[in-house]
Length: 263
Length: 344
Image 1 (cartoon, rainbow over the protein chains, first blue to last red):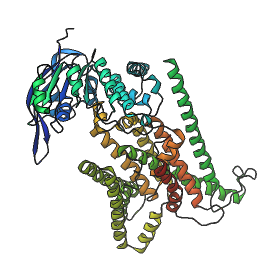
Image 2: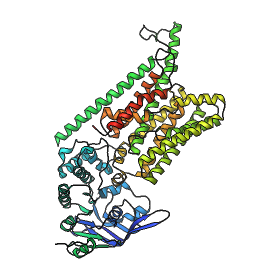
Image 3: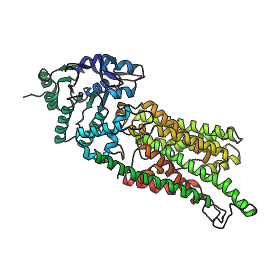
Image 4: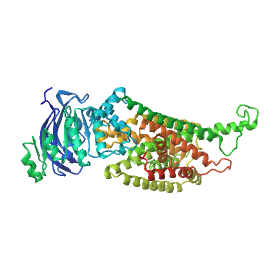
């Protein structure tokens, strides 16, 4: 396994929303490839289409055109040579939700309202793609859940009711749940949007830590994170064009778009 | 790691004892239901049920096996079915105030049933099944309307209010429609709207039993899906839930349950919304593989209790069932509103 192994690529994707009456384009034609175990950070002003782009690549919404390829066996989540097309699967209206759940997991900015579910129960739901139609967890599922708890270091929260946690703790639980899903790819959509500064810093470190053996794509407003942790940076400008490159190369673009001076 | 397993097992133990409590309580109420009624039967005196020579004991036997047993069974099954339907709807709309009666789904079922009752005046098993089918169709129509509203507005509160209004609207249309029929139909319609578990025959009881068992199994199969669905659409689909299939399963199960019970027992109110909260109060969990059977027994408990109270033991008067369920159900729902059922 080399560091430069490609796990995800896309050809000419255009994102946006369409219904019967109109098509609303959000980001323009963009092609890319993502290396295994890297962090790709998407930044841009509010409303520039960060979340739309991330949700499209992660298969939650459909691209207006273009193709996205996962170099993963979607049944097992392990890398393989022949990439399979996410778009093809999406367009056929037969996207196998379970297969994709084994390939990628998603962490959103807003944590869910889950009534009286406990932390352990929520993290164990990450095992959903692996259980049969009877919906029964095996010993293996419990072991994976506990591993995820330990990896994030939140064993002490295990029996708490999710709803009673702080926002920072909730996001950690949702990340542990993504780990229990046991995917090679994790997508983060502004995971620290509702967190205070200390929690934000903690979360950044946690994500950097996870990236040692996971491929991460993240949208954020945190330029510090983008410059310090990401291997690849994508900046969406107000016209929906995407500028991609290493953080060093893109300093000028950032200064232009955000009208700031980077030291 | 070992410690965690121990704690989880302790939680489970509490849930098991809570569950056992619900089962025993429903059984006790079932027996009480057999014992209570307008005719006083001296159960305590010896061997009434065994001697055959006594004329009085024969009548008592008839009363117990042909009147009270079907009634108790239909209260047990009907209450459980409405409760299960309410639980699935609360999960579906991710809102503690959802229920088949609140959302107008029961009114839709009632409308469907009324149409068939007017068109096909004969009764019997074919009539009952076609009435039930029409009731299910009415329930499905209202549920699909609500789902469309949720998709269009994205606002659950608005959808709940719209469902409530749709319920009034449909009930009024049903009421007007019934006015154009015979006097007897009007009378039986008014009786039907009051709700009752006693109009059930052994044939219809088997039909209800079949519907309840199959729906119960179907909802148990999707219990993990229900847990996952609570995380929200985006999370749930990213974790492998087929949203479309799940939504249709819930719509079909709840409509069949609501339709069957409403066509047989009338629009019984409040059990659907109150029973899931009654169950959560005892079991302190949100896991559907525990909530589904727990809520079923909670619904049976509320229905049996309401039925016992409505027969006013020893007075020979029967109260309208819906008034009794409302009196039992309202405090539970208000408590939920005030305290928030999410609290420990």
